[in-house]
Amino acid sequence: MKVLKAIVDFYLNSSIHVALAVYAFTWITLLQFGLNYDESVLYFVFFATITGYNFVKYFGVAKFHHRSLAGWLKAIQIFSLLAFVAMCYYAFQLNLKTLIYLSVFGLITFLYAVPLLPMSYFRDSQMNLREISGLKIYVIAFVWAFTTVLLPLIELGVAIDTDVIITTVQRFILVIVLMLPFEIRDLNFDSLKLGTIPQKIGIKNTKITGVLLLMVFFFLEYFKDEMSANAILSTLVMVFVTLLFVVFSNKRQSIYYSAFWVEGLPIMWLVILLVLG
Image (cartoon, rainbow, N blue to C red):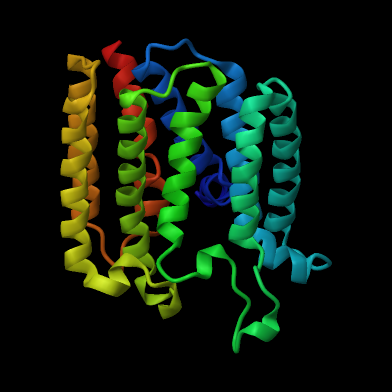
């Protein structure tokens, strides 16, 4: 049992799970627009997510304790290096236009982890993008929406029309909703300076906001020029299951509630779409 727990913990802590979620969202975009499976885009997104997330999560830890890192962190560092090499390999298979856009979002990821200004400008800490009050959730949603919707479509030469814009807005909204259980979970630990949604409006209003956003997410589907019964059905199932996870989230949730189950919802959505054909 301990071995299984260690494997699951490494799977989550090394960002493989979140990378699969981003990979699933990207594949969903290809399915929504009737595009073929594109190995270069999907694998790039997968390995770039591992690289970016591990950089953000462990940058502060590694820079101060690089000589005495715990075994699990050293393993994640080695794994992240391999993921970075794989990311570079697939990046060279992408178009130059795509790489230019990616460089902008690479900079955002860097600024998200690295302090913007020297410590002398602040009384108690350095500041990076994720420490700017209220910005964290929107930065993540914006990057996910670009990476999983616009990136594959730009790479494959799809015109940015109304359906693409609506899908991007939907993805932005959905990622915000998926972040809410995480913000509720971290309510007792997050600094008040972060200005998270639960900190500003409370848990009950956060859940109400999540429900309302899910309604917007679903009904935006009807404004698209191209609709299908499978798309409507899969979206409805995704909305219903996500709603349940938002409503039942709390500050004392299981350590796997958000990190595994909520983060795995995009994978569930992909499976539904693939089963529906």
